[in-house]
Image (cartoon, one colour):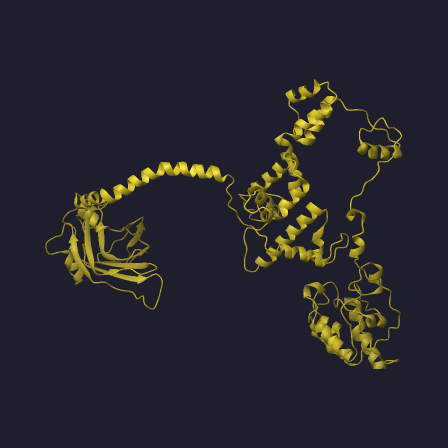
Length: 611
């Protein structure tokens, strides 16, 4: 018996199912082991001072005869008598005297599998008292008889015998006294209830009122003056039937009555939740339902296509559109690793509930957690349906609704495009090479050959108090300008095979003489330049490089202040531009090796200006 109690604890159900009441759900299988007929006085004193007050304060509200009378009893467990604790509840013996490891009450107090009381764990000292009490043999002087409890059961088999689940059978219309009023057998059912209640039917409605009722009922729209006139001036005996037939043949009929079905199957053209993302293809399912009503599609076919249209008629537009039924419900726009599984099960639950409420008239969703109390759906039935839908998910199907029209349109397009494509190919092979060579050798060839890549500065700085900032792809120095200063400019590029650096000093209307510098004639002198290239993505085989520079070309070089001296970096002389104020100046430096890394390159340029 003790072994069984131990096994029961090791195979407990998930914790979330056992947070209903103190000590969870305890079974009735294990009898209360025999205790002393007369507990020792010290044992009774310990129970009365340490155990009973805790049970009264934390347990009786859910596990006592009073809770039973109030309809609040949880887990069929009574702890207000010794006999009640001996009987136990739904999951095992509450207390096994002398066996604290087999006593579920103690496990619940320790929050070991069960978590009782649910309002919060009791102090360690209280739990220690219960351990000591069980070791003492669980002395308990309470001799009252246990209250009778009734275990609620769900009889699924009996539920399936309910009248709503029985097959339809012929029924004879009831007899009525006024046989002149009914126009069909349905009228006899209505009149029988009226006669039983002593109520007489109303008189016939006026033709205008009747027309408005029918129009609103079948199309949701009032009749136009012309439509109303047609009915009012029709004196034929079947004028009403002809009006109904006209409305049933109207496209508005399907649009009106499809709304009832679309509401039933929770259709929307967005996913709901916080993001409420649009569903661009949702209209295909909506249009299927409208067309099905207008075409008077048989109901059994209507249902089959929605449940398995893509399987019954693979590749068919109408059948595939019908399966939008399953994914018409709410669906969150964003998933994470933690939410993917519960969201998937919520989606499957939504599909099953739509089948139940829309097609079966049954509230299936309750069976996700237990056998249904009212509809005859068991827990097993529910998850069998979930299993059938496990591969059903959102997807997009590309279907050509008119392959022949597509073939003709493609043929027409090809006939128009092929001559143009052939002419372009002839030009590429025969004329383009000569034209390209002539263009490359013609005017402006030198400028095109350079193929300079204009880089936007990422960061600029100066070693002194100069204010240096980047404006677009231009670096501007302003504020207090020092006579000796170093500027550092960084660029980022994913271009590889960089072979050189070009500096353009632009004229400035605000500078003295309109030159690019701050000298008295708008000039400046570049005395040093250094370039460093580093990989944006670090790797063992990618190390920063500092290419050697060669002064290749410069505009407006002054004698004695050539560009080459800036490359030498002697700090005393360098490229001077003060000889041509008011004009743009440029300098080109060539690298001794190509620069550029896979994954991008950080290029750093250091410029020195000395008096």
